[in-house]
Length: 137
Length: 394
Image (cartoon, rainbow over all chains, first blue to last red; front, side, top):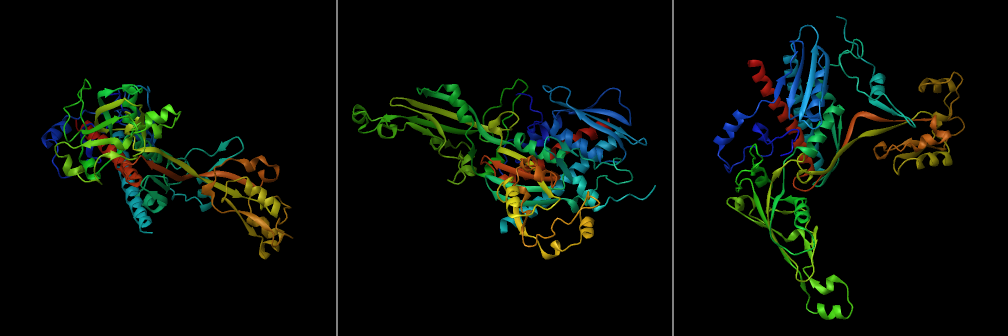
């Protein structure tokens, strides 16, 4: 398979359209097994400290990279955040975070992910309301 | 710490507009980050976002939805667009098994054409379908009812009843000479396997091409196509046939700021002609405007010259150009080419107003697809967060 930047076919990203419908297709045991074995996609690059670190995301691209960069830059303890795709034919995305005041980069990344998930919830919620109103008209 | 500085409404509006000049753009990058504007609090806040974020629907048809997302950053809007194109799973034909093909279109070309035919079927069943997993050598797992859909295409071309006679008379219209010479998408037949009848058993839920009239091949008498196909789920990043949209795009809302009035029938009409139909309308200059003292006028406009006169004076009742619907504009910048308009109007785009257009290929409804992209972005975050938790625990 050509290196799809993000491959939702791996592990638990399969939650999308196929989540929990009756019909018990493949053995769920197998799924769980695979979920556990889902490969680690995150790595801290050498030379990192608690307040300045580069993370390597396997199989991610501009989709998550830029969105995550934006939301992390919204955090006031962040001195710098940027992302790069070191080579276009390698499905890797590097994210650099530097913080002020001894704030932990791990906490900052965690907060960024949580904030982005909150954003998705708000977008979904509001989109559904407006769409349903529009359908009624 | 000093109390947070709150920018004025005017400043906020000014920051929202990306300037568009004849040959240049200005005020391009987002500046809503902590530390950019001294003293301002631009940190992330869900509640603030919830207050500010708005959605407007312009059109919602299964194959075409248009809506605006207002209050987002381009980074996030672009993430949704990219997911729509490349990461939502879709069913398409992956393998074609030829039993016979005597048409002039080669096997591999025909297989490629078949792959690109958009399919649809019962949505619950499509949700129930799983990936056909591949091992590290890219060998797919055994085909099974939960990961593979079997389709069959059989077509044969024959002479029509009096085709040979007509042909001898010099008739060349294939519709009169032959039967079955056009192989169309609706000749693709679904062959249910295992549990398929439960999900795709009715005429509404059966797996079928979205558009029945797609021409797949042309045949001549004696030529035959007999093949079976395996359709499976995939994502647009692997192949365009797995992309659920064609296309999904956004543009920023155009902004037209008429800073000095454009008055007079000919003048205003010429201005309106610089834009697509429906962007510019006309209003009569009111008595209040015409009788406004120059000093009052100067207070209402920006970048004013010290001795500027009220341009409405003496034009009461004449038409002036007004912006009716900026959304229809294409931002051609035509008006900036005319000397008489170029200092009176400022063009731009609204930074955080994204007009999305999502055209589904038909497997899913367009609005469902957008919601799916939002869910997928969240799933991506969740997946990374899980890895991050593992990383910090160890």
